Image (cartoon, rainbow over all chains, first blue to last red; front, top):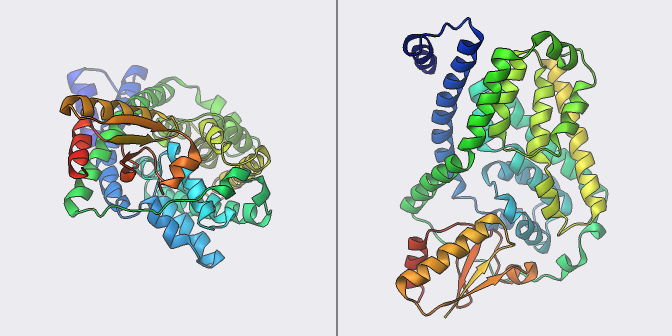
Length: 315
Length: 79
């Protein structure tokens, strides 16, 4: 259907052949915008509805007092359905620590939440299909569990800012929501999400379209193809300081992959971008000391590189 | 009456503050608005998602950027 629409606009309405560079770039742009928008609206609605059952206050209660292995898996899974706005990073972190949830488990949640989110899933699914999207979820969860485990084993508790241990949390009340509230919540989330990301999406797809039509294929295959060993670490390191939601980055990645960049390399780039970002580090600095931030960045970066190599070898 | 806006100063918190002030002006309410940006104080209210609204020391909303209309309704309900 999307294919037909893009064909119709480019070939019939504009009269541009698909074999021209302009036609190919334009076709990519229209096809991608429409497809991603439709998928995004439906997925964000469904996930937001589910999310209304998992507010962070509840997540905290569920994690409290659980055995470590169990809590760690649970934290990673809850991170998937209970994303939080990055501006809540600080209260969330303190809430977890105050509730006696181990540091490693807290980090598992902090990693899994941005890496495996519904927007990333929609994009991966629409671009690469169900196999890659599922694999991404699995390795994302695994990354969160393993990185959290390592941070927990390193006994970094003293690198949490001292005032955190003094904080006393007041009693939490979670409002009861009716079905109507939940549906309204989901609808509003769709509106907010689209409002927030449409520009990134358009720019991302436009760059993707440009790469699609104009980028030199041989060059990319040579430097970022499967045989290039340095590509994965470079992609990760470039991705860490960049901040974008998955939405802006994926159309670019899609076009790069079509031009011969290896898929693991591209995924490393994306994961680094969503999991580790400068704004989040600045927020985290309010609650943890530089040493722990360093450990966090290094652990997650290594994990992401391993995932990148893994994908490149297997696929 | 005191309406407190809890938030660490991110964009969402500022939007919520603006909407709250607008709601109060629209309804001609005698409510003073205070911002709470100090993290331990925010946590004292048991809030884990910001921005949050506190009316007369009771948390009436958290983790949401409410519109002026929604804020008006919430204030009415919690008077």
